[in-house]
Length: 316
Image (cartoon, rainbow, N blue to C red):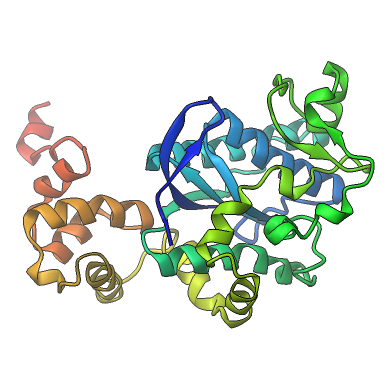
């Protein structure tokens, strides 16, 4: 499959982009969606945020206390910015609708680069599978992009209306934004909900599965949700012990370089360390122990300033 592809971005430019899994977790403390209006608003927030941050939405799923999306972005920073915009817009929605502030204080957003064919396919299958968290059938769940894949929702387009045709007041009321969306291909059904196939880059997912819908369905059915939850959700948010962290990092080393961690060159470590730092909840000391490098070397690889010496801190 082609993991890195050429796409036209929302700003009109054509760029090589790569896939990222982005998740916003309520961490059991925050119910993000309290009624159907909230679910609908969250889907629209995912779309508007993608346009604002110049990324392409592939597939998404919104459940009661979290949401997932796979997007195509040029760089890690673009994917991070997208996740941040989703959180910001969701906070504004809560404030406007419920008059509540600080609701998302305990909510975490993470963007993880999908760096292998296995990772891409597993994440693309894992996202719509989240419908099961709401006790719903994946095929019938209305708040995911599953129906966009393999033209499943084309026959259901009845009384559609282009988002680009909305007047200013309608844009605020239906799309919950003042953005000018005159150039988007998005379509609304007769209930005012976005039609998934008009907002998702289904072609990317379909080529990832060799344009074979049965392959996609088998992957959803055979997926180990606990494993994916650990890789995409828990690991980036939970501090692991040194031994667990080493095992995870060693596995990535084998996947990236087909080499044991201890055999990596300094150049290879310099490529791997920023990725591990982004996708795992870790620290400079733990990275230094794991990679056998000085802390200041780790800080330099992460683009951070050198650690202040105790004497300097005292004199300062």
